[in-house]
Image (cartoon, rainbow, N blue to C red; front, side, top):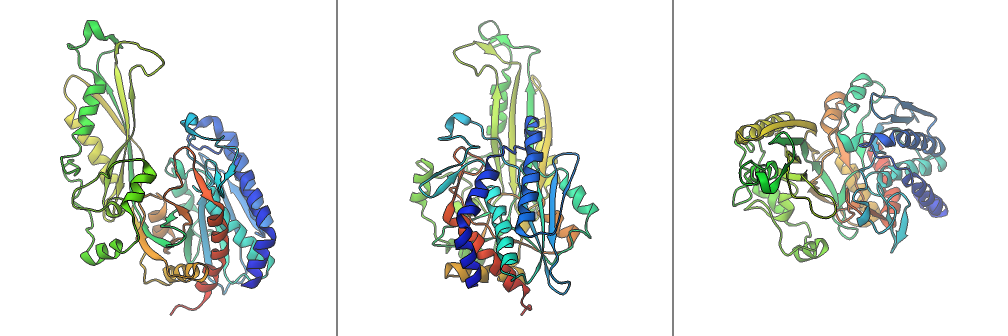
Length: 456
């Protein structure tokens, strides 16, 4: 353990510089113009794993972006840990809201500002550096495999096929993921689950072309107005989702579970101040933490149509568009919810517009049992470096591939995230605290140590 700390201290500046180099690669999976950057990033990830001590590495091509695989099989009698992460990042738009270039990482007040700093380059790279520490100090007590993909931010459309075709290659005793957050460095926590996702897009068409709003306004339905009304109708006065059947399969938390959630430190005034809002909003009868963890949601992620350029142009638009995502909780099926939501929007559309609605991607919710050896190993690891036991919490985000991993590989997933909810994931000025980065590197070897111990 002292060797781990000493090696990290001696090499921490290099660790940071290597992460910054990775962050400079604009690996935006959603934009085709960054295809070459995706391959460049995959090669950089592979090289970092080689340098960390992985004797076997390979870049697997897919119909989309490449998957990076690596392994170090220390001893066949040791348990095997499969580390999952992703090197792709969200688009940086809107660029004008960034305080610095999103792909020229800037350090300010001990924080790294860059796209992907926390989600997920900074977090999966902790595992790469933890591997280096364990190989260099000859303290490996597990076999370790890595699968780092390039399509998580677009729903992992090709990873499922890869996993199904390579179950022997990916065989492991546990899957370890750092793509989540903790409450704070003073109040460490572990996500015991993530929500599922249903992501759709809607296109409404009214007239066959844009019209003069003076000549035709008031006589022809405006698709933007119609779409806005349709979306608004999806919530009632209690912010309850009105789509018939939406809540049918929701697994309600017990009073005991809700009481445990209530014990997690949360300052609503601080929450509001951080976001610059006057009041919180959400489903009546639930707290803020419950709304973002144990309840399903329906949110508009983007809406557009008509003229949005500089100055004025008085048009009645031909089309209106919206992107909508639903976060799902245990027992809800992304396939079922997607079909339900698509059908609902087609049903409620008035006759004076036509609807084209389709799915982008989805994923299932996932829960980790807290009484498992896997979870307890993570909890003990965090207690070892933070000096206190972590609080189990439900995460609000989604990692679409989780349920498929468990189904195909037959093992449980443990989430060991070191980000913060305030790290501006998917937003301008994404950041990752350097102290969190270092703390993750320090903590991960302990997980391997405790997981290698016999189950109690």
